[in-house]
Image 1 (tube, rainbow, N blue to C red):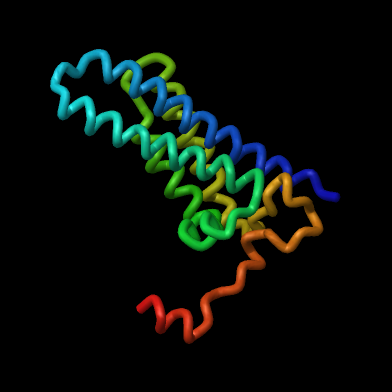
Image 2: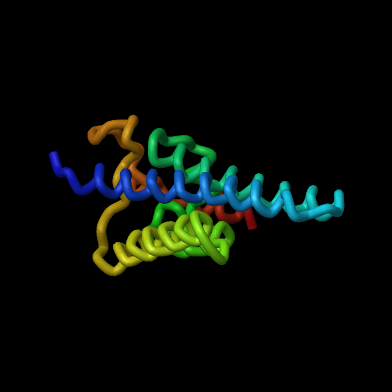
Length: 152
């Protein structure tokens, strides 16, 4: 049994935790400075969705959920994970302190994950699904021609 898939899962879990923590921290700091009710609502909704996306990354590293693997198909590829993580990292990044550290950690870890696309490494299966399960993202069947026509 190789240790590398578990390390890659752990990197993604740490990445997701920093996205969630960074978004909560950013929201708490920015929310204090905004006096306008409409701007507060928009700020809350933006960072609520970033927290939700971080939670999706976290859950997909633990268990395999069909909706996540089909609707967030880019998470089945290293490049997609990297670009997605870097984008979220820039959203949670602040100019100083802990928020800056969270953003930098997310961007760096995402760049590391994205670089695995050049190494042709397989995406490991979720941790709680086990090594012998058929839930690895590389085993997800592509859409058939009929399904492609249905979604077109």
